[in-house]
Image (cartoon, rainbow, N blue to C red; front, side, top):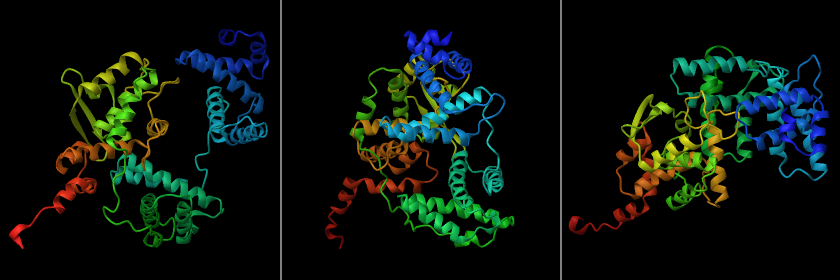
Length: 416
């Protein structure tokens, strides 16, 4: 039995055996053990499930909604805060909701979310299909636009008005709220573009007024106005060296960080990297470029190849997934873009490295800046990064301060 396997102290064992829904908790723990979860992780999970089973009243013949789980999580966090036991309430709440949802879904006791939870959801589905099938946008562009559109519609939904009554003032108020939440000008401008595209499509189909799109304006962004921001190369090297403890997480993260920093890959390109994309016989690695809708081949550098091979041989669990990088804790699944962001951000903060961008794209900028410092041409840098045109690489000209100073110091001699 799982409880006897996990707990030795009689008092603790009795608590788990006699707690609510003991049989259902034990079945879920056995399922997780079969998925490869370690004993220490199972012990932690068992304690979480015991606490959750006392907080959520699971009916014998009914279903639990996501809203009920979230309400129970909120009450638990408030109780913990009153007792002074919660150091991170948002993290505790997120963990409560995640574990409870996985458990109840396994028991087939979690009610499926309603497909149309807010106004305009059906419009979103049509717009996503339009961008994907007719405009041919990449899955990352479609996903990014969907997030901001859903965010707007959820904010609009609280007014209890039909989508057909949406007005330009609603969009303006939403964009203004992003500024109050300290969103940068570039992100707000990008959100405005996504909403403009969405309302143009909705207006053409008669789902709302057809003049909304023309009235959506975001903050003015001058072409090439900002510097590409990322950590300096010394900090990047320090970041990679921080993975030398040879724990499973370090071994995996070392390969990921090298792909981000040396090849300048986007996070989606790392997440989608598959086992068949590495040609070990010819020391080549193939990168799928969603924006260009093509595959680009690189030589597999010895240090990167050794890091990936070490991960595959020592850490990566047996799995039906073809993606190379999986989570280090069961249930094992491919890493998500958000998971990759957390890896980079957590390690940069732990080292005290200060940079405007703490995610994977900051390492892509660092790679480009390092190549500029090595005096590579912008054509070479653009090819390496997978840019579609040299204009996308032009921003890095601002980074080459030494080169610009050299131009400024040229003596024109007798030319004037």
